[in-house]
Image (cartoon, rainbow over all chains, first blue to last red; front, top):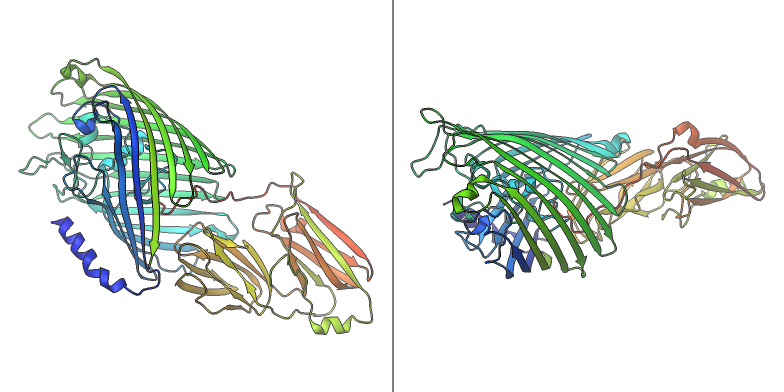
Length: 401
Length: 217
């Protein structure tokens, strides 16, 4: 229903842009990969593996294809959408992952106000700087931001007040961000089910992710959630982001079709430092908890934390990146079997080569090791190590009317 | 006017009044802590006596690769500045600085008429779409001015003999303004040099990275 409405809205506005001078722009990406993976079946295919691909799903794969139209309706109002296809088990062959209005009035003083209304990613990642949550330092984002891409989309309104320091002689800015949203009640269910993953397969608004198919973005308890955050940019060399997220879910609420509201809260703190024209250093940590059930039944309660450190070196057309991830979930109550307690770490090495305006070649190797007691139910050792090698060719285009 | 290329602007009036006396040259260099020249530093030379001004002249502030080019433009009061957008994406240029409030609605290419800068002062430019874009227009009443080249050097010519106040300024220089202002005497003949050796590290901005960045979250 929501998908049909979104497509109808897009189609209705389309003729109005004809003839406008560069009011409509279209970005597109096609990412095709050769993949070699070792270890257990991926969570994408019903297994306990925490990487996107597995030995049964390797060889030539579609990494992702997307179209991202931006329509500047008025000088200060623009409409953004991202349409994705991944060629996997998604319910819809093509789906929407973002659809929002951006309002940015011209500043009349040092504080600039802006707003986003619709469905979009929260401003938490320092590595997913590309269009549609694309990680620009490696193919696969960190465990922290893989999870954000999988289970979270702000469906509501976000306001930002940004103090622009340049007018006062300070080379940097400081922003306060706040948002209220709905339809995020199932957020946390995926993490509780299978722990953290390292995957560049974010969820779409109306689709499923992985197997067994799990849908997202339902409003169950009619309680809006919120997040509040700060961003500080210093001399355009250092950027610090802090965010507090709380979906304010009522863990006792559920739908007849079996979707539960999860109470998920976390804090995230991250920094990106670019000391010169070559180096980028990023670190981010996330800490929170999630709960479901309660009332007459024992409540499922889990704490989680994850962090990563990344170093990237860019020279000419090339970029080399190394990253270390650590991630933990700790189930404290509501046991129905082995505890859903995960302890893991991963090493990622990525090399990217720009072949010109349109083509980019990327390669990435990940080694992820994790212990997860529910593997016992599959007669597997609790501790598992997986590796994944990806060689990707990415085509990008941009058009404007 | 392009800073660095034609660094000196003198009015016909000042030229005429100084014909009887001989003019000197002032070479200004700005050197950072590591001994490298600092480019795009605004330099002004104001005579202590007299009220000479400079004729306004048209100038250009370009936009390329999500940067203002040059980062810093120095113009005489009353000058007009054209803001062509030669980037691959559209921009919305604005300023809310006291010296000039203006905004140029979304555009590419050369759409908007030039903007007149009729008040002295610093005008900080921004783009309403790309927050990381910052540019500066230094609007000066000084009769002699320019901005330094890649070697941190600027040559001001045809300075009549007399006392001057020389000021250098850049948003990237962290040294105290008092150390960047000097009173000097220009002799009516030959060339003389003023070196500004910075003591503090520059607040340098690296180029925006990565190049493919488009939207920021």
